[in-house]
Amino acid sequence: MAQEVPFKSLRYDENYSYLANDTSANWYHQLKFNPVSKDKTTYFSFGGEVRYQYFHFNNEGWGEAPQDKDGFILTRYLGHIDLHSGKRFRAFVQLQSSLANGEAEMPSPVDQNPLDLHQAFIDYTVTSAGGQDLTLRLGRQELSYGSQRLVAVREAPNNRQSFDAAKLMYGGKDIKLDVFYSCYVPAKPNIFDDGFNNGTQFWGAYGVFNKVPVVQNFDIYYLGIYKKAAVFNDGKGAETRHSAGTRLWQTTQAWQYDIEGVYQFGNFAGNTISAWTASANISYTFYKTQGKPQVGLKTEAISGDTNPKDGRMNTFNPLFPKGAYFGLAALIGPYNLTDLHPYVQVNLTKKLVFSSDYDMFWRMTANDGLYAVNGALLYAGQAGVSKQIGNQLGGAFEYTPNKYLYLREEFTWFSAGDYLKEAGPGKDILMVGSTITFKF
Image (spheres, rainbow, N blue to C red):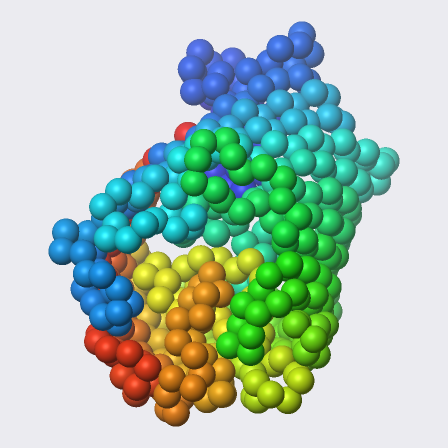
């Protein structure tokens, strides 16, 4: 019987061609590898996911939002069909249904999108004698790059995000290069209504270089975005922004590090853009110790606008970041921010992991406001003079009995700082959450 392989975050990256030599009568293997040609080079693969989540907030929105006494439930269903025809042609189709029940307010598009075409693309691949691949991908697809600080599938929120895109991918020994042009797919409230929309256009080039002397792994990239209507503390208007960045990263048994820097330029509503961010995530794993405890420190500096009237816009735009940027509670977005974030993790058993983190937040500049993960302005810069936003304590138990099932219990406590107390009610937030995910 063939050995099982783990699921990928990007389900289209899974490859079940190894099951061509499987002689067992395993119905699940037949679901993952269903040949329709005698030589088994043309085959279908089916897969999906069901996820249930329950959340309860006390003082949601730091006391600003309507209070919900019994919490709410989020459900997500994903199902895909993957067709491979020989080594060159491939088609992938995935549906998504994201539902929200019991929220005190109207669910946002991040939480609810009843049923829609999430991905539908075709690949055409040419492989050289040296094993180098060149693939053209056309159609609706997920994009994910680096540590997902700027381009992510948005896995943690209920509704994953996708793009209508043309992408050219090169893969060689220790080198991967992508060039793409896309339009973001905004979620709409009805069934199969997420049509093509050019209101947000996104393009770029991303290169990954492995086994580089001294630094080991090295990413370099350029990303461009155009939005017809963008909103910041500085005002509203059209935005054309360019991001140039680099990332150094490495994972060993003991040390792990991820260091990234980005500079942005362009124009927004007649103002010149000059923004930046720098981040570091460094951790150490005691891999010879029982439980393999890990201790780490994350820190970020993310620029904010220094003067709304100087004709320059300094607020950093994180583009399409992972939704749970600072924990699943997703209270704050990566704009105008400085944070210090120590964390620990320990394997209680082979299948049960406990993690805890403590995050301290400040505004980078007191002239800019506080933003949500989706970029919405929560409080304006002039709403308070303090830079202190607050502190957040989180903890989670994660249990993975097998590759198909995942369970998570967590809590988040946010202690409101002076700025939140100046800008609004400034009450402390407590969130508890439960997640059950089944994949096949």
